[in-house]
Image (cartoon, rainbow, N blue to C red; front, side):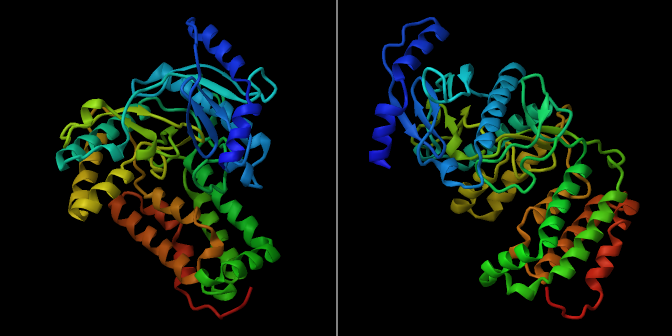
Length: 405
């Protein structure tokens, strides 16, 4: 993209206007603007982050509309302002912003604090250092959870007002553009309804399965008639659940959608030859952040990236140890956190898997695995709630004639 970026930098932006705006905002003379980096969606300068008008990720995605991009910008501004006002975790301070392409700079921009730090690849972290990071990340998640919000969706202002879920920058989410949702139950039902819409569009369903036939076992490996009845039974089970599980009220919190080593900055003290005491001093890139149930650990301040890094060096035993440190820190008395006793995180993982890539055997096995885990985790406390899913389990276990789509 070199020639294209040179053209954008020389003619698409009015950097003198940005310089003047920065001088007014911080009440200091801005003497120059330096290009720092180009990401998937934005062009980052030392002074500001500007929306990429060229062939960035959004512009290569035919399903991303200008309205999607605008909604994500508004939500990111609201998210940063909410975080700046309510938590102490290291998030850049937002000084000024403009979401319009028609402004003096000729692009949506954000003026924000620059945080100095190092990337993970610059560090050599010891096992003791990984343990400290796991506990620090748990502290971030716990602090965010201590400022719960009223519904599932995406922030539209720093006071906690909620709009529909914005489109994620990093992963496909079939419920983007929908919501807000007032309960985990409503959230899960929306996933099921989206899948049923997909299955009922028979031509589209067959075309999708045909396109993915090398990985799904073929078009008839999950007949539409079977899938339709399967998800109708799941929907009926979810409808029968109470809006909140007894003793486990819903907790909705801000969830970073791309929390990994590429969006984290570490202190200069972390950059010793080997570091026992690394410290995260900056959490960047809150674009696409949603408000999600605390049990939904696909997003948020989780330690998947730590586990990947540590296990690649020390094996699964070290990973299990780090996961325990993280969980214990989250569940420390006085910290607000809520895990689903019915393991909804496993169920939503199934629902978020495109149905066109699954075979009937895979779909059934994943549901049975979730049901068994939920039954074991609940310790008999939620027999009535799990009984709602019994009809689907019986349907899975019953013999079925092999009918095509």
